[in-house]
Structures are given as C-alpha cells and as structure tokens.
Image 1 (cartoon, one colour):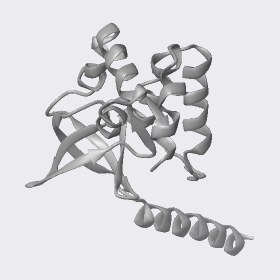
Image 2 (image 1 turned 180 degrees about the horizontal axis):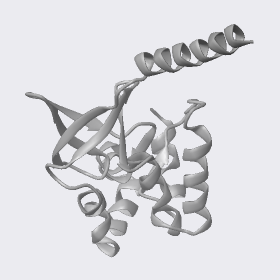
Image 3 (image 1 turned 180 degrees about the vertical axis):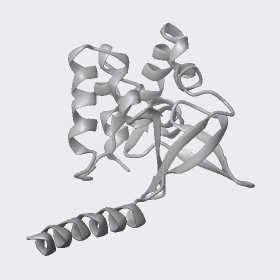
Length: 174
C-alpha cells in the first residue's frame, strides 16, 4: 500500500515537473509607439518590430487600402469627421513604454491589451475593425465573431452607419 501511494505521489510530482518544464513563458514586449488603431511598434531587447493586429482589418487599414474616390473611402472620411476619437482608440487603450504580452501568428501580432483580452477583440467590439475574410483560427474564432456580432447588434463604429455596406466590396476584393 505504501509503495502504491509512493508511486502515485512520484507520478504526480513528475507530471507537475514536466508541465512546468513545458510551460511556455509569455513573450513580453515594450510598446514604443501607437501608429494607428491596429498597428503598433514594440521592442524586445534591442530589436524593434511593428505589430499588425491579428485577424482583423482595422478602420485605418480599410481607409488606407480603399480606392481614392470610392464610396468606402468617402464614408470612412465622414466617419472620422463625426468620430475623431476613434483614430486614437488604441492610444488611449495602450500606454507607451508599458510591457505587453505579445504572440506572433501568421505574420501578425496578438497583443493582450487587458489581461487575456486581445487588442483585436477590443477593436472588433468597438466596431473599429472587422474580421478578415476567411478567418478560420479555431482558438479565436468564437471570441472574435462574438465581439464583431456585439458591435453589429449595438451599432457601434462601422456598424452604426452604412459604412459596411459601402466597404464590403473593398474588404472582399483582396
């Protein structure tokens, strides 16, 4: 009986040890600059890099990528005039020289802006971004879709006006 108990105890200790050894430490990066709602500049050690928010197309990118005289570009220009604070959403949310947990996925960044809540999710919730077409990541799909649905139902950001109707072709042509 004592031998059985010792074997179980040893098994528990070994499992805990291997879980500890295999635990992935978070990548911590220091925010240097907020370029736009969905793009930030970070540093790790002496290396700087730009983070483009994972799985979303931010209002800023949508505006930059829209044709010069498109209905989408005009609608976004009007949106910014009526809602100037939206350009600075990420600047108010993220603080320069603060350390953030960052993960890299598909050449983009997952920035944990508020604990386990990502910047992508917050942008979607505020209607300041839309999910990229064909987004299929099982880990984040439900979270991001729920955030976008919440913005749509509450008519926040892009969903509060006819912007999405005007920009849908711009989003899906790429």
